[in-house]
View 1: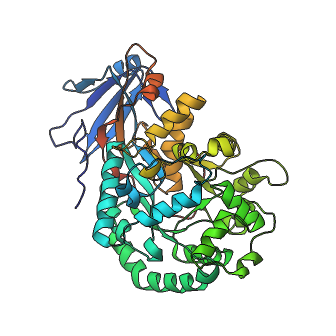
View 2 (view 1 turned 120 degrees about the vertical axis):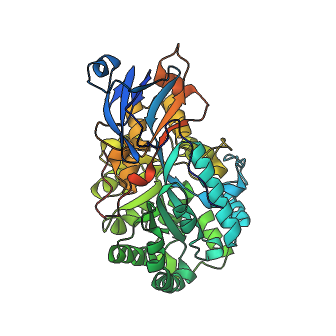
View 3 (view 1 turned 180 degrees about the vertical axis):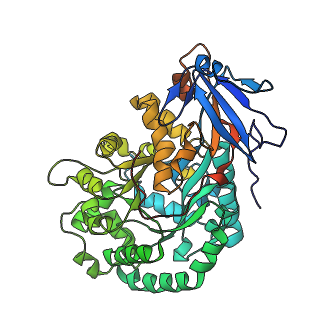
Length: 468
């Protein structure tokens, strides 16, 4: 099954198309906002280009064709299409699942067992689950993703990657793998064989799709430093982006720092544990410090980073800032797993101030309460209403910052004169209320105003990672 692109309010221009003016109570992107605002779109070949943007009185002074088309949207605001920096599309078939982080018999490891039990093994069902995730992403105004292509039972599958490439979305699909203890040597051998036989073919399939192939060593509690080192060297050799889960839970800190806890028990239960692991962990290090030798080598997109204290002797945020590390923070997952209570509020604002590129992600649909859509719009709403996070910060973390993290053209995720936007969204509001506040309190999905993502991709370069 191939997912068709959305039907936007403004279709692709034809030879007969003329300039189009759109008036709305608010137009906002990562860099600027106009309330009220007017936008002039000019047809250019098969795309719409932003000819002008400003307050209505400013736009009134511009010389424009007499046959210009005008669209008034008094009950909607306009923002760029959104990027989801961290998601697991191949888990979409599971759907939202309840989780009590305060259950003494619960915790992260039992939740992982549930995910393992529900993972799909065959190509056709995996493709169907990814396509369902793509459909729900489009329903939420998502135009690009950093997707983790899971490895059911440790089997490497390129089905999520090729499925994403056939879709209207762009971004990076990171092939996930595990390797620690008794499995460390074997996964390196398996990955070497996989890349030898698959990499050239996959990258050929990805040409002109807007999708990039990446690698995802799972996390510090499931990947040995030896395997991380192999991944870093391989990424540099083949120009492949990397993503990993880092500092996600207190259990991860216990495992890395002490070599004990439920995550060690998880490895023992599956016969993976080997005492050689203790040569790398159990040294009272924080997971970020543990991974720092790898982070120093190349840019890595690190998911979650919920556990990032910034007091001596850790200085974890300072360490991240010295590298080209980017962070994908998933606010609703952070709340779902009880990290807000266990670890405190996520330090994303401290990270941003330190110069770290922080983006928003959703994690999988399993931890969401929006079964019909997968979108960082709802994570923006959580941060805006709960924490009072500013409009510009939220828009940076869902457009230009993740564009840099996934090596997409950040200008295409702004509403800037002279650019060709990858997409534009409208969000319903109540006219009697301040427009941004109304949009953030709304529970309505966005609507596509413009959809033209394939004009905004660019090839991967290891220089990405800087915040805007």
